[in-house]
Image 1 (cartoon, rainbow, N blue to C red):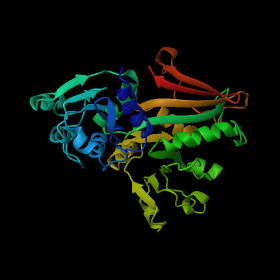
Image 2 (image 1 turned 45 degrees about the vertical axis):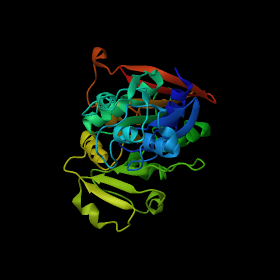
Image 3 (image 1 turned 90 degrees about the vertical axis):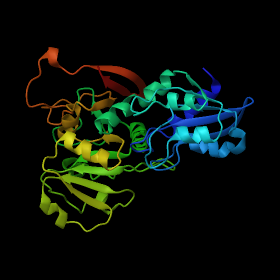
Image 4 (image 1 turned 180 degrees about the horizontal axis):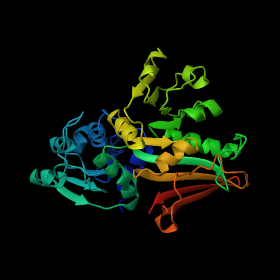
Length: 349
């Protein structure tokens, strides 16, 4: 694998989580063995990675090779097709790491017809980066991650509602980074009432996610500190039309749906430009999204302690007992020890 392709993929990985419903893409222009341009897609509506790299290369792009983490786009969106720009700049060869299965037309054919050599150079790391994006785009639903912090016996709090601190402060710092990597974080009204959280990203130059609150009843206490914080917008999903009359704050938007189930909320969020959603909530909301067919990842932080009790705050609950053959199966794709707390990243089988 070319080191120039690795650079392009690294650029894409660096901007993952800040491009909304667009894919994170990196690009490098090389001529005579020297990098003459590089770029990354920084946010939705901004120049694509290939355009940034070509603009930097300028006249040096003629007869050069461009490396791209994802097959160059062929459609008109908020910006023109990247294949047009590649042809315009006189690129000799295009090398990309992942085929874009969501494109209406094939970039390979357009580029080859223009006399440009094209090479598909598959890279597993790049493929992993785009796997959930392709599914999200086809279904018009954000990439969905559910995060849970609990004891070894699956408790998010004791039966007397005590929850600080089950996991340690180092885990909290890791969660801040997780929020930075997502467009929005979703929680339930009961979690706001119990914990009075802010759901911000307390890392240097961190990106604050949009705060999304689910309250079907619309019983919101606007005196909680979250609602006075303007670090990022707050969207409240409810089935109660009357809630619209209870807040005039410009950073708070009330979104009324006929039915606030997980699919309806996810589809509406995608239409609003949310490409990656983190669910960070109590047992009821967590269970709702864990049962969703749209779940991509479960990130589980486990503290080495047993809480016991009745299981009032068990992180996963269902109305019916699930037979073992029907139980949802996961595979562990990543694990890390964080000062005696265990971080597990899991995906549905």
